[in-house]
Amino acid sequence: MFGFGKQIAKKAEKKIVRSSGVVIEGLESREFFSATPVAAVKAAAPAPLKAVVVGNSTIPTVTNLVGTWTGETVTDVGRKHADFSINMLTQRNVTASGKFTLGANLGNNNVTSSIVTSRNNVRVLIVGNGFQASFTGYVAGNGTMMVGRYAYLTKAGWKTGTFTLKRA
Image (cartoon, rainbow, N blue to C red):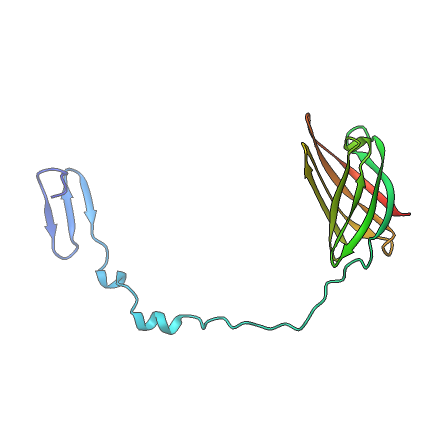
């Protein structure tokens, strides 16, 4: 029956199967392993979730980033300082756009991009013509200063550092 050998003996009470030194013993009655009745499952099912309406909430954002911001970047390795500036030309809601003059630490690139704000956090992603950089930071000093970190992809790999900008 199981291919274990020639001798197979069954005891009706314990349902033991013996064969060539292997013992297989049946477990409790199948009643213990039967499926839960459908009615019990339906009774235990949680009620469907209801949508909860929360009152209007506003996320405070920096009111105005338009203008000239000047400062510097500092590399993590070697602590090299370089000029960095942004001339924000327009802003609509949480997005401000302008000209980024990135200085020597970021390949002396001049690009047009946008800053996205959330509360007082700022994020910038610049991608184009073999150039990739990202900035993440926050606006401090009642909207007079931006500080944070940057990452810049070079042929040798990623360079990272910090930036500090003050409103001019």
